[in-house]
Length: 355
Image 1 (tube, rainbow, N blue to C red):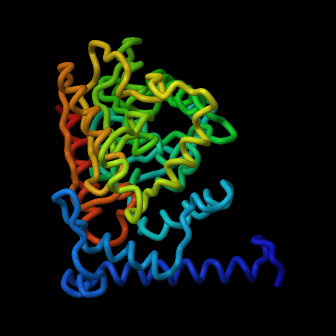
Image 2: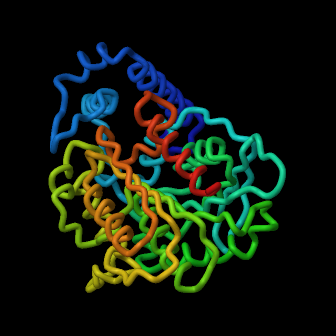
């Protein structure tokens, strides 16, 4: 046996370990709440909120297993670790059809729900999270399947260039180009150009917000924006940013690495392409659904952006999931609470595209 990750024996060992980890996590989070509470320890209460017991248990199991954070590794290893972590909580999510394609010059994946009905479907153009340095089509495959199937919409997940190899504004430019491509090709994708949405989580939510702003400026069709715990202000001058920066998955170290990787030296943190919160809000912005997590460093800036949109006359629904942590959108295959929150987000997408 060699040290090469490509060695067949090492691959089998790695696969077996992943299967065991997944089974243990699924089993633990399927236990009754009372049993989970005994295993997780006393309730975690902070800022008038109580962390979901299954989330508390998952975090405790992670600490007991001494699972290192992706941000503690070199970037390539961190990307592999992040993908591994997401697969542990993804489960097997059914969807009608999936096909890979290219949205302009970017790899993309189109999800079609099983029951499509008559006529063209709505389309969500989705950008993944990951601090602008992690994530890809596979890391967010499971939530895209859930969104497509439950919302009854096609979902076009699009990649973008990652930092530090490609710092700001590469991701922003790719997101705009991908959405422009989707507008141009909506009908050939079997979608209704009048029912287009843009969405994403975390860094992807940041990109989705930027696309929505530019769509309004350019007169591109856009019916809805779905922003899940979005990063909206690179200055991060909020209570939640320091209150939840350790112990709740998204750590200060991760956020600092993301900032150092994506932002070039001397970058203006109020550049509206980086911080939508500081943008001048154009007329005609699409209605927005903004979801935040109670135990998330990005909670307050996401909610501040939602309030700013509302004050500008944009139709906004702000939904905080007070017992959740950053990253819950990907937790659709284990436990109950996170999946219920994702289902609620998918229902909001359905409503936003059928109103």
